[in-house]
Image 1: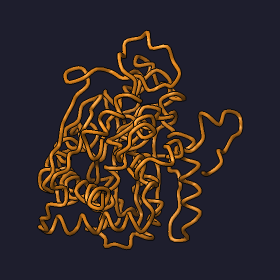
Image 2: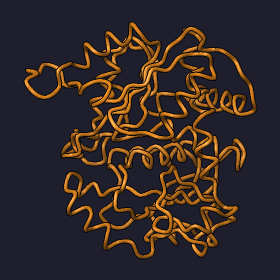
Image 3: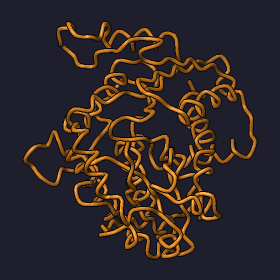
Length: 361
């Protein structure tokens, strides 16, 4: 674990880690760092083969449970199709309609709204399914609490099958896998030295920082040069940034820099990665957050003139996209755009991950 940059409150700024997972739990994927370099390469190589048309019933006789505590479009669809194409069975469940909320904290008196503890739910679900994929719902009140990802770690502690993170408050490793595959298809497997601009975009409903956190660390781990641009007050989690700085220092071909504007970041970039994310300063205060976004739209729209500042730059965005607020139609629908390719790559990369995690069971 990379030490936090400030000792005042390590519970708030310590880099996120899978260390909370019980040592006897099967290997799963809570964050991208749970995959070693060799296993990450294996997943991406398997993904290439699946995308090329390889069909193998590697999950025949196996079941994967999907528990969604909040909505999903690409993640859910890609996973269900992936399990089907691999010969397995997916079981989809949504909180509120198919099951109830669960308590993740240990040792509490359960006199609140949750009628069941993760400890019990995970133990039982592990007897039905060969893996469990979880999309938890952050409480949304305090970033210092939600960044701990207590929910996904509780499932990993108490389950006896692999747990896959389908996007927690702090990270979205599945999106990072698809993004890495897209970058490799576009620039080759060696991404060292390629320049990527990660730029904030405005939205009346900004997302959490999970996608940007995972993409930032994945790019730096690949030796890319990252230029990060956002308005003041939209700084990313300090624990993640501490880890990012350490990763940047490890690779002489790459590194992390901060740009004052999106245009500064896009200069000489090979990729412009656009994404809205909320202000962690205003986390839990929706009125203040909405007011702040409304005053910061100018100069953060990704348009043709911004893309032309790069080196034949390509656009990436994890979707959903607010057209002509985050990115113009001409860029999204033009030859620079990789967004549909990114989305399509959710299927082969999630097949590659399931194959790696489950075929040897």
